[in-house]
Image 1: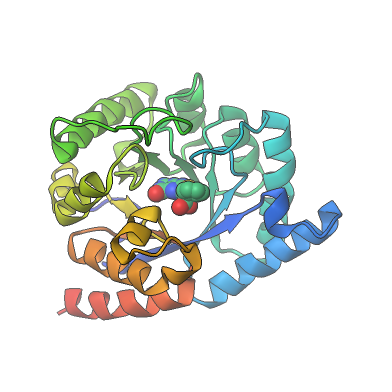
Image 2: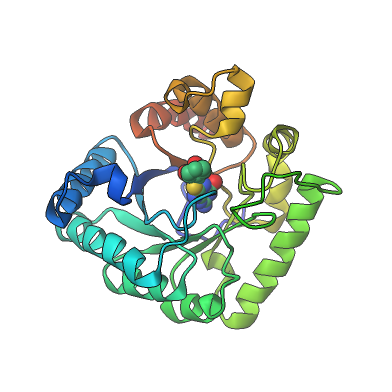
Length: 274
Ligand code: 7PM
């Protein structure tokens, strides 16, 4: 296998722990408290085996209000600096805004995670300049409306076409091919059927010979399968989904429940190593 990214060279699954820095996730009032608790959560996920901490300011979440660039920077930069001061863990920045990408990498982030696949004005150029790995995620439509009647010809073929175009755009902008990570974007403009097709046929994305990242953790597709809408009842389903994605070739996993996922993926990795 000609895997030439910093990830999955060894065949070990890479776990990315989700760290939200939204005011309601960590605020007990002051900014200091919020940075302190975000840092504690990041260090806990690292101890549990996370290889990457994904720091997000919520602007990219489906249905989320638009956060201004200044507000997003004020949320994520102090957290990145605090983690970097205490730890060498890899940090990814979950953003679509080129200014945030730039400030985050200057503050110590190592990877850019963009649910908008670097389609914002200036994002490709900033990422080429920063020369860090980038995760380009597929999303049909825009967060506010993407779940009203998503339609595909063939969801896997359509996303493969999208990746072809975005990889070409990245390379034309000067991003190295070996710095690209692909993510089919579970739940982003997809019905349950689309998401299941994607999971079942995830192996088809191996044609690009690039690492595949999946975000399945606690997603509503799992709630639909379970007939249970409570997101905190999705742990076992999330772990099962991660294992199935691993079997189908995923090498990076963006998750809330680090310890459970790391243990499950160790079993997958043990078989892959035989
Ligand atoms: C509400 C609904 C809040 C969905 C948050 C979400 C992904 C991501 C997210 C993903 C990559 C979540 C999502 N999902 N980045 N950011 N891949 N690369 O479940 O699937 O965390 S936000």
